[in-house]
Image 1 (cartoon, rainbow, N blue to C red):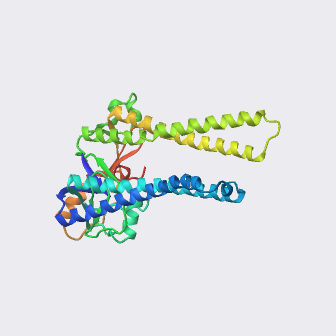
Image 2 (cartoon, rainbow, N blue to C red):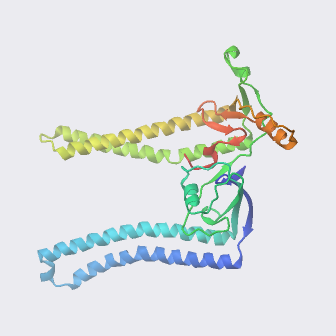
Image 3 (cartoon, rainbow, N blue to C red):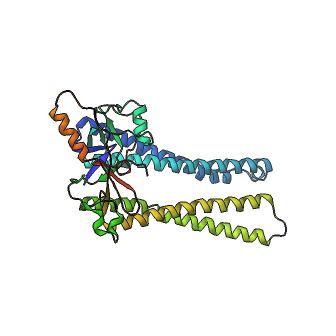
Length: 347
């Protein structure tokens, strides 16, 4: 098993230098005080309002205009506190990431050549737009991340100007392609299976990677199922109330219709996630992939014999295979390279 970020494998971990440690300590202190300020500031304001109301005369508090203004001020304070809590938790996460990096005392370095660029991958697209990543098929690139949080610390020697978290995948090392057997050996009717189709057993690392992917799918499943149950229950209650009412208002009908549409969309999404989870579990139980050979275009014949190029061509021809999982039909590898979803956060 190895860690991969942006398609780059993890090379080594280096210790923090004294200057880097001082810089991270300053940033951690900054985000820690910012988190405390945005949370405690509005809270003190909300505690101050009742004290002010006790200090004001009763005649002023009984004024209708002043009472409405006081209520608006209290609502603004509540809204500010809610926004402060959200921002404070966000700042506190940054403080925890920096504090954890200082505690571990090292930086993770991922280095190599990015063979495929995906503009759908948000982090990769932002790095390209910021000029931190070079779009070149043979350019050697590297990124350094904080441990645990996977926050980008440096990319190709440049410190990013904004806070950015990258996706790190734990994937299996591609196994040799020689351990394959014909697929027809396990089929009840071998004559109906193409003799070119083969199967290969997943090794222990690949099965572990598939287990991690199943856990990633299962993690939001129960939360989504709870939302479906809550939205469906509220929709049925509102529909029954609407049915019992003698006078039906338009806003009530629209509200019930929106709840029904929301329940349908969430239920459809839950069903798709459950189906994917079920198929992946069956793939894991079977423990093998289907190998499908792909035809390659005929390369032009050179006027001279280039032995290194000829060797590379023969190896590429032998590795021109597509591997898919048998139940979910999910792409597993292409020409000996991992499928995109295994290394990128596209799912």
